[in-house]
Image (cartoon, rainbow, N blue to C red):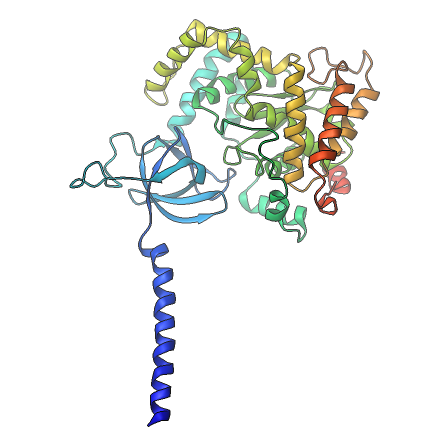
Length: 424
């Protein structure tokens, strides 16, 4: 009898353990959280990455149900439609409007979703009017939703890049947020519109459309982007057919590097640092900060509000204030920036490259090479890589790296051979 009783107790314990494990697992599946979208025009994508196709844009205040999560991303359901948004786009759990009237995930007064076509139309409409007037590259508007690689191609590129190294550990080795604080984690929709106009004018100088090089540069840029505060926003990278040395960043995350600068680069880590530098200008909104000093921002902001309230997809008129704003953004993107912006972008750029597993000293190497080639024939007259101030930049960023980016140096790579195969 004792033996039978012991077996019964043991069996009950196993059943209890199984039931307990099941109870622990059930809430994830059966009881998804209800949360609010806390950011305007949140990108709603087919997968957990900025490189997945865009489904549409979600409005701030929209109630959603969470379904699944992955590092930095949350899968949500809206009226039966599922997609992924960045986890920093969500606010705390939605609360009831009153004790007797709970908030329904389907009780939304605002549009459930701004379609991809409507969002694209709003951006392209503004940019086309601007580019027609300023004789920019109207054909470049097709690049607003351009994709240079598929998600599966990018995942293979990631695997090849890290070669068994732990990407998450590499990204987490820099945690000193107080060294360089980034307060704004968004590119407002207004900057997508004016930024597209700026990018189209930069592209008018002539593009290098080599598809293999574009795919490679964009995949390197995306790996660096994933370690930034704007990991969820699709930055795109373009090559200008210009033999002089220059790099430009538009406020909508479109970054341009000339063939002349690219040919000076000797490895992938140098490319990663240069792209990180330009990303930093966008993330810190340096151009926007600069033009705010020149344009009546109160009137321009009012015009933007009216523009956002217009019917999605329609071609808007461009008031004087908006035209001035876009033109000044172009000036800020292509003229020499304040040195304080360059110092900040250098530091953030090497942080981003370091978090992606690249050698941060690569920026010092390329800056020294640029400085060594500083003659009148080499320098682009409007380049942000001017000779004056280069010595100070090199000293400051080298000191910053030695003081802050020295953990597990053996994790850093340069990937010289892959760079030469792709670009040279």
